[in-house]
Structures are given as structure tokens and as C-alpha cells.
Amino acid sequence: MLLAAYGSATTVFGCTINSSLALRPTNRYSSLDNAPVRVGLLASTSERELIAMTGISNEAASRLLALRRKRPLRSTDDLLSEGGISQTDLERIRRSVLFFEDLRLVITDVVPSTGRIMSERPFTIRVQFVAVASPPVFVGVEVEWVGDTFVVEKNIPS
Image: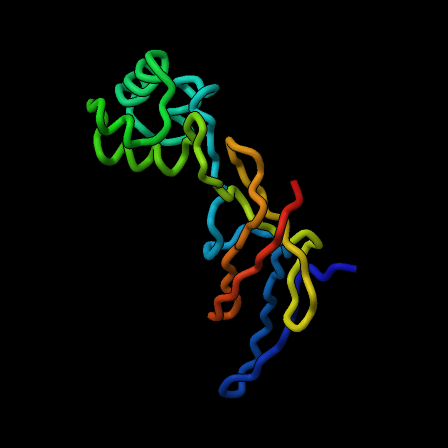
């Protein structure tokens, strides 16, 4: 049974105040959480998807796709050498796009696999990621819990 609210009565200066505090679902999105990340593969991303995913200008998206048609782009360094894209748009592209033969791995979301994490109880997390190359053999996720930071590391078999 799930409780929707916790009720209490408090007496302050002889007056009784009834209050209830609604409990939020355990899988709620909190203001302290990071939004899940959308990442696209440059080789298969359309102009509309590129703009929606990265927030770059229409001109930068057109320029990027024109450069992609000329040759495989391996990093934002290739874009920098070609020119025509602002530093702001380059940074947005760097954070949201994987290039041809890109060796980076982008973690898109980290969620508890059992619904909730409780203090002093073992838990597992599900790490979702995007990679161009074969999946990595080792992944580390930094987690902050009640002000303390720890790292969860896992070998992934090929």
C-alpha cells in the first residue's frame, strides 16, 4: 500500500495547525537530477534532429551537414579547421554528437534498476550509453550521495 500523504498536527502558541505533506513518487525527476542526455551519430542525423538535439543555429547545422557530405568528420577539430561555426555551436556539437570513428563514450542516463536507493542497502544502477566503436570494456560512474562522492566501476564483457 502506498501512502499519498503524511498528516500531522502541530500546536504552536496554543493553536493547532493541521498539515499534510504529499509524498512524491520515488522515480520522480528532481531539480537536483541531471536531465537525460540525447546524443546523435553525425553519420545518420538529419538537420532537423541536429538542431533539436544540440540547440545549434540553422546555419551551423547546414554547414555541418555540408562538411559531412564532403568527407568523414572525426572530431570538432575537423570543424574548427574548416571554419564557419561559432565556438558556442562547436561546444554544443561536442557535447551532443558522436563523429565517424569517435572513441568517446557518452553516458546518456543513470537510473536505479530496482526503483529506489535506500541508505545501508545494496543497490544496482542501469547505465545507458552511446558509443560509435565497440562497447567499452570498463565503465566508471561517479555518484554523489548525501554530499559524499564515490565511483561505481564495472567491466563489460565484449
